[in-house]
Image (cartoon, helix red, strand yellow):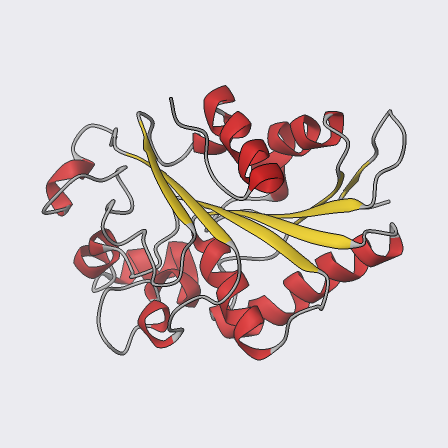
Amino acid sequence: MKGRVPVDRKERKQGVLLLHGLARTARSMSPLAKFLGHHGYQVVNQGYPSTRAPIEQLAAPAVGEGFAQLASLGAESMHVVTHSMGGILLRSALHKSRPAELGRVVMLSPPNQGSELVDALARFRWFCMIFGPAGCQLNTKREGLPQQLGPVDFSLGIIIGDRPAMGLKYFFPGPNDGKVSVERAQVAGMRDFLVLPCGHSMIMRKKNVQQQILHFLEKERFQRE
């Protein structure tokens, strides 16, 4: 039962795989897992050792195991919600293989074109020691991994905030959430894009964000007034 969140209502055939971000654990996505579970989804909240290996080595085991758990729960459609580097992890995995049952994807604050913060800090040894090889891959350079993955060809909605923590905004030339710029969160082929008044680290816990995730999974678009 590791990583699974049971639902307390009639079993559905819709599953959601959750992938956390860099230097986080599955615990960071637990409130979102409970929210989606209460709305009838079978949820697998997948953890992975984000700072111990390059993204390419982390992607296949984490994403593959998550999809396998959803299949064992009987999910006929497998949606995915990611936070931060989890989005790059997913893109890397899908670049090589994807299940036929892949449904809709929501990425929260993804560095889809890298992060200027990584550009500024990855030259320091302490950064690479703390955030590992995967963290150092999230730069904006042409040879950086995010730039090598190309456009997406699946149903993708992206949500990012524009309220950076104090001091972090100065690493970016435009609106940002403190870790990723609004511009670089975007990727060619995305279905919808939404900017909300929140920061990077806790975006997945915001009630309005959770409601928007639910709306995209159901309607393939975000809700606007």
